[in-house]
Length: 137
Image (tube, rainbow, N blue to C red; front, side, top):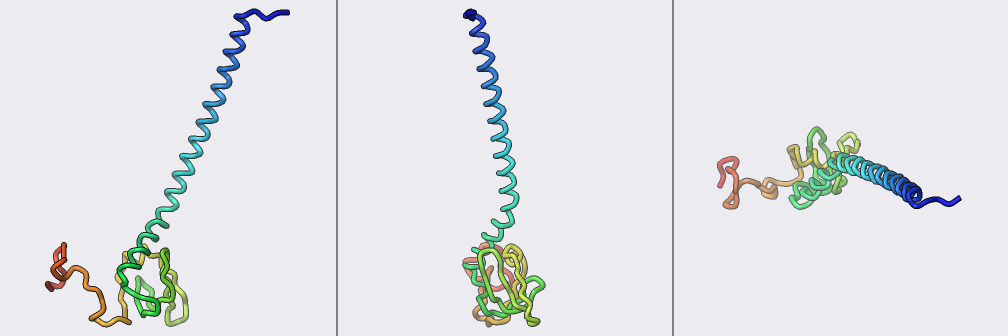
């Protein structure tokens, strides 16, 4: 039994339609999964990124060094580690406190180990772009 030309074209068109539908569904699934994973990665890495940037800033501002006695946020002790993501302080009770660098950069740092002459004075001098603190120029 021979299949006539219009019937053969109709079968081919149906097969092509099913193939295109399958490819569109697969593409939609891939795009949806990619968007979901991208959103998941970007939201989860925002705190890691802020800690990394804060760690880089802390490295170049040199507000404290390893071994310095500091008070950062609620922790007072000696700095035992300073990495790109966290700063570790050993308290007088021998407790190691890990402080995220985004918290370190956002809180006042009191350095008991450095003298007044070695503490950088931001916001003073002729290069001050903002209103200078303390009236010193």
